[in-house]
Image (cartoon, rainbow, N blue to C red):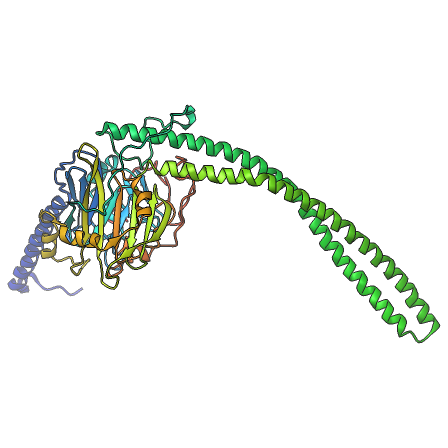
Amino acid sequence: MFRLHPKRQSPSLGLASLAIVALAFVSTVDDAGAASRRSARLEDVAQGSLTGPPVMAIVSLRDQRVTIYDAAGGTMRSRVSSGRTDYETPVGIYSVLQKEEEHYSNVYDDASMPFMQRITWSGVALHGGALPGYPASHGCVRLPESFAQRLYPLTKVGMRVIVAYDDVAPVEISHPLLLKPAPPPAVESAVAIPMSYQDQESDDNASPFEPNVKRWPARVAQLEALKSIAAGKRIEADAANDQADQMTQIVTEKKEPRDKAAKALRKAEAAKNAADDKLAKAEKGLNSAKSPKATKNWEEAKAKALKIAEDATAKVAQLTETLKAAEAELQTATQKAAPFVAARDAAVALADAAKHKTQPVSIFISLKTQRLYVRQGYEPVFEAPVTISEPDKPIGTHIYTAVDYTNDGKNLRWTAVTMEHKGADYASYDDDRLDQTNSAADARQTDVAKATAALDRITISPDVLARVTEAAWPGSSLIISDEAASKETAKATDFIVLISTEPQGGIKKRPKQFFPSDNFYRDSSYDFYYNYDRYGRRGYYPRQKSLFWW
């Protein structure tokens, strides 16, 4: 290989090399320092001032942070990393649907999602993860793992989660349309509740939708009385269900001979039709016979076909009578079972109504559909028409939440959050942007005038108000929006409302969803499966940190 003699090498080349090395060293040091400062800045979690259970989490996409609020206005704040370009975390209204301390994604390379709090069944969640300083996830909201771990035991299924572009803080509000709790009603006599129906005093068995009334003795007594009534109604519903099951079992047993007779009759009718065809063919052949031999053959064929047809006709008649008798027995059994089935349905409806009285009510009013929808305990209850003045004028999206009692437990204290869009650049990574998103500026308070103006445009019929007032507990909510409920609002969810003018890549690019089983909240084993994640998967492996967490 040709090499320059040392004496012939240019001194300027050596100086340039040294300069390049020096610049590289300085650049490396600067990059390392910047990364260190950014890491420290992102992992820094503001000291929280929560004094009670969280009632709401508000994620700001612009500021890349989340603020947790309790009923008294206490907060806990952290940096986040939301969905990157094409996988944006959709701006909208959610709630916590499921919690799992150890969780792994089935979509994104078995990615670890520690302290996962799901907000859609299609896979969007709050969870611990890497925070590079800009939106980087596939739609989830990543939290510093230390913060996610602190937050996890504080929250309950049902906590409201709001994803907004601009950071906004809830503000107290009062309005005649916002529900007021009815006085504690006269309750039925207490019933003896078997141990199997009594709620155990543990967080594992307590309903995630039970309102927090611990500070209000009269409301505690009211809730306990309503829970006792609900348990009694559930006992009655179970007893009615057992009786209905016994009667429907008899109906099922009577269906078997009816179905068997009907099947045999269909076969006999087919055989009779075939025999009639053969008889008709023999008669036609006999009529057209040209010789004594042919006539004799067709006469024998006709006699044989006639005998088969007569036997088939007799079989059809016999099976027709058998079927009539079986249908009569089935009808009698069905008639006897009908009152038990009706009693079961009525008892179940009463049990459901009694259970709903112990759960906060969630109301959604859509300008787009001009209807009001009600859910309780993540179950649809009813819907009804609603009157909205100036229906051609946008109303915005507003979330009103009953956070606690006031006036010695006689009234509810409500807060409002109004979501507004300012224009978004969800994946801007420049330093100025990072300095802005990592600032500690307080969230802007919701404009009470706008939130009040939206309520002023709504008229709800008295009968609908009466139905929802009886479930006006802390934790109740009212959502008013230009939008219809998202398709994500389905089994075992509260209302999920997405803002259609905002990017929704974090949901649109997810696989088709599967929903949990009916016993999701009754069976701690959670016997459901999603094609996008695997419940409890690899929970026994040590959690590995990765910059590519979902």
